[in-house]
Every structure is written in C-alpha cells, then in structure tokens.
Image (tube, rainbow, N blue to C red; front, side, top):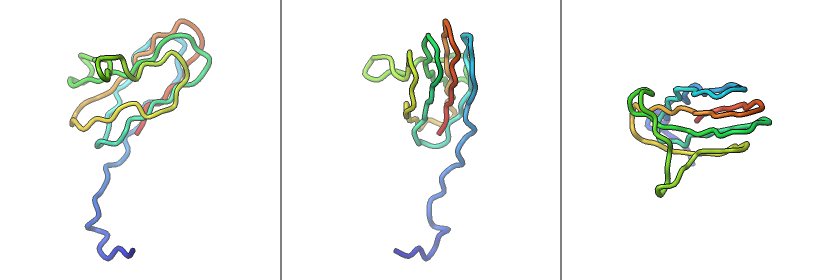
Length: 112
C-alpha cells in the first residue's frame, strides 16, 4: 500500500505528560489529563501494603469519583499492577490516583 497524500491521514493528539512518582504515605496525586479516547494505563510497583484507586473528575479535582464497571469498583488495586484501566472520550475530565498506604513504598505511573 502506498500513501499518496500523508496530510489526509488523521492526526492523533500528543500523548499527555504522565503522572509519575513514589510515596511511602497516603496521598492523592494528579491531575492526569488524558488526550483523546485511547486507554489510560496504570502501573503500580514496589513492596507496599494499602490500596491505590484511580478516580475521575469533571471539575478539576474538586469532586472525585471512583471508577466502576457494572456497579462494582474498578481500577482499584491492593497489589502491583501494569495494565490499561480506563478509556474516556469526554473532554476536560481529569484523573487522580488516591493512594492509601499503611507500609512500604509504592511507585506509580499513570499514562497514555
């Protein structure tokens, strides 16, 4: 297949800056501002005890809601993870990682 007019191909938005860090205490980190409707990827690693939950906000983080699928909690982990967790097409939404940690150190990355 030969592309004769590359300017007619759709342009994908630039990947947003990931939210990356480490913590030994409970915290809320963000915002992660997704671009387009490609999956949001969550990576959690380390030797830690607690829960890390991805939350969604439509008002810049003033109100955050946990993600659910079929009425059940989603994108909430008590151990290491490395997977796509959500896909959203609504413009202007932000995502936050709520970390409740009782011991150890958690390394996290929210990206697209």
